[in-house]
Amino acid sequence: MTTRPPAVAGSFYEASPERLREQVQSCFEANEQAASKQRFIGAVVPHAGLMYSGHVAAAFYALAELPRRFIILCPNHTGIGHFAAINREGEWRTPLGSVAIDTPLADALIANTRILGDDWKAHAREHSLEVQLPFLQKLLNSFTFVPLCLAAPRYSFCEEIGNAIAEVVASRGEPIGILASSDLNHYENQEVTLRKDQTAIDAVLALDPEGLWRVVDEDDISMCGFIPTTTMLIAAKKLGATSAKLIKHATSGDINRDYSHVVGYAAILIS
Image (cartoon, rainbow, N blue to C red; front, side, top):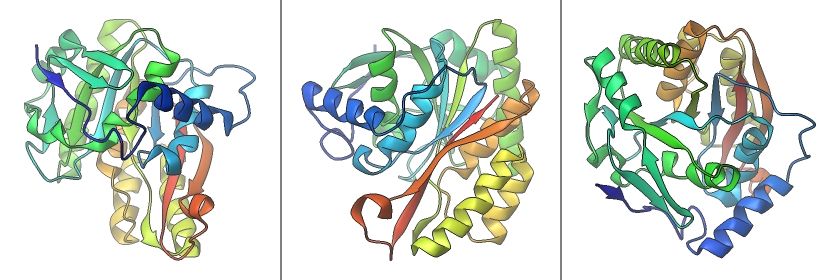
């Protein structure tokens, strides 16, 4: 069995199990306790270091009624590997333990689209999916997941992958969460970032994948995970999604008080 070791423990989040548990707990404590859990089809969650965006991600994880199976889509920041990389077997390890890849679910996705490539290299140093796992490990005794690292350069590729995800999820007859890992605008000032963030958020809230793809290009929004988010929206709509809720929106400036160069973060629940 192939085991992917943690790539960003000690940088994006604490490396020791005890400190990581405390760090994740502090992210949850930064939000009001949800009165009730909400079912979801898909979601957008951020992926910066937990010290910056963890409280935003935790706002989603605390609110959501979490299943035991997930398809997690992330961008490819490293430029390494296949442009639509899946892992079909093995496990991923964090300081909190190991999480198994859902091989039957991965194989079903591979069988439903010609685009996906089984490629560990694309995932080996990628942080944006890895940082989701400690939240799930904190809340769930056990779960499985399929990792997808996407740099698909065409909207049509997102359509094919999104449709394949929807078909596979629908055929399983059980809840499977579809998570898109993405930060929003990068390294402009607070005013510009809030405006650009809202443009992207509005497209997601409208359940408009084509609109998101368009405004990211036309408005020069440096949303690193717009490809995973577009793909998630396509899948969620095909699965019957009719609404989206912005749970939390913040920037790195809210943490370090440097508002001249900020990164935007949002947690959005699709149902």
